Length: 118
Image (cartoon, rainbow, N blue to C red; front, side):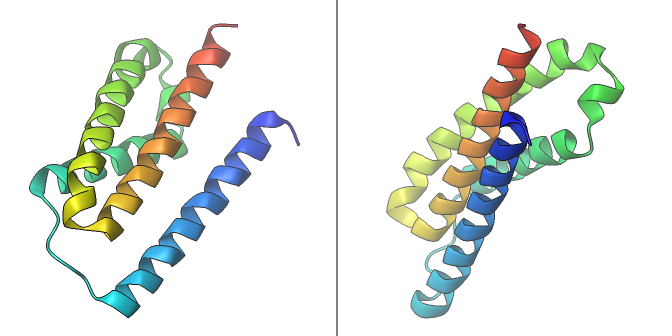
């Protein structure tokens, strides 16, 4: 198993752990206030980015990688960071989920950028 496989395994375990932590916090402390619309939008775009990466759309159509993946990923990760900072005061559970998906998307984006630069 190479470095990318270990990184994918670590990121998968991290996402499952954060999901379990969010479910546990939701059970013990309740749902809390509703998240902001901007936070929901940024989390939806982050999950769309992860879904597109998982189904390997960017390897099927290699021209998309330079034109869409890096700019879209950068903008969405920036939105996720901003949404996390706004959401920390409002809904900590949602902020934790947004921060985890943002971190994973940013790591994947940097990994793909490093690999494509070789």
